[in-house]
Figure (tube, rainbow, N blue to C red):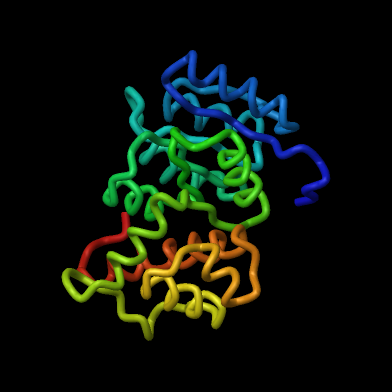
Length: 211
């Protein structure tokens, strides 16, 4: 996709005031919102009608949840990538969203700029997960207790392994950026990609089924 053109987005959220406010903010910053949806089923219809680049998806909606809508969209409209926008930073919700096919997870408490960063990352084929989620969850996945992924089976790039090692040592993003000669935003992109891969690997390690 040519990112010089406006990113086309469907926004799915059951709270009309929040949804409309977000839509106004996105449009003011050059994002083309092509449709709004109050639930998962409406989001699927909107995607089928408009073919957006990205779907911004709330998780807890009446009727069809964002989890189920993401699963269906991943199967039926894989060209429209899903970014979850949720109040929940619960590990299970994050894992379930990633396993359903979401390529991004942003907390609603985040700034509009971070939501847009998630949208643009998704449109570019990358992952973006809020830093407030990635850092503690990555460290937890690397702890001895509990199911751990078989690192030999996780296809991390050399740079991702360097970032993960420094995160496991308790380093902050700016420290990792300085140590590896990267920008802080590049560190966050690597961390999001690592987390996505490790969530899938951790599920396999625990004998769970990727839903």
